[in-house]
Image 1 (tube, rainbow, N blue to C red):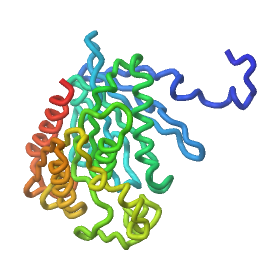
Image 2: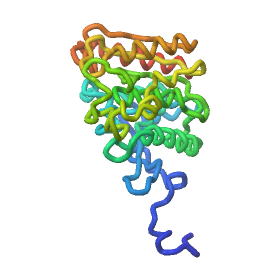
Image 3: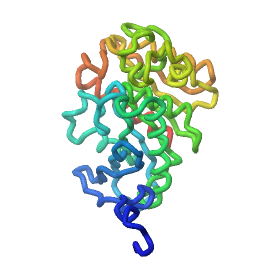
Image 4: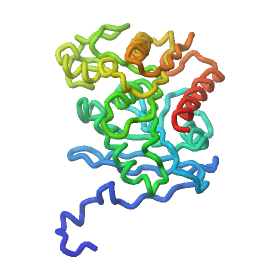
Length: 294
């Protein structure tokens, strides 16, 4: 099969669009998981990978998709980490979502130490393209995709939902994400070149106004936006809940469907909430996603 190929071509890893898929490993809930699947190769950086949770194979139509985007201030984080309140769950949140009939893709994206914005947003678009390309093999209906993110991942999820130019996403679940990089809020100032937001852009947002606006979901709202569920703790000390209030108001003014949930007593990452309230937020978010693709 390598006849006629040069040695460098034969040494190169297969392109993710045609590379063999790993075997799916059965999980206790009857779901299956494929771990470490490359979806994009970028020169000068690591291969970008995803973990894919698949629902029980019932022989029915292809599964709708949740594209999960992790947090970590755009500079750290694990692709399968939904936040510290979910790390002790067994089964974990991805397995629970898959048990409800979804495929769940937890994706890498380039962090701020690897590439500046819009690199992470471009990576999410590449993940959607790869999932569409391999959808028949995977049993996934990429045309019924809900993007779900937390913290910095929620910021990227909102941007993806508002800017994706392929088939429109079915909706977005946005947990305590920044929506505006251009305005001082809480302890954040756009003049500071050392904030996570500045590292994301490659410079202080105030010095890069066009990039800061392009990276702000608040400035990308339009009347064709898909439905949003936005949840944010009222006591958030890391990302002011004004981000979510303003994003929800802009979506509502534009005529888009938005469900805003401000959670009393909750700090960032749902810190400060009892376990049953964290469970309720998760269940509500999953129900919202299910309602979009049923």
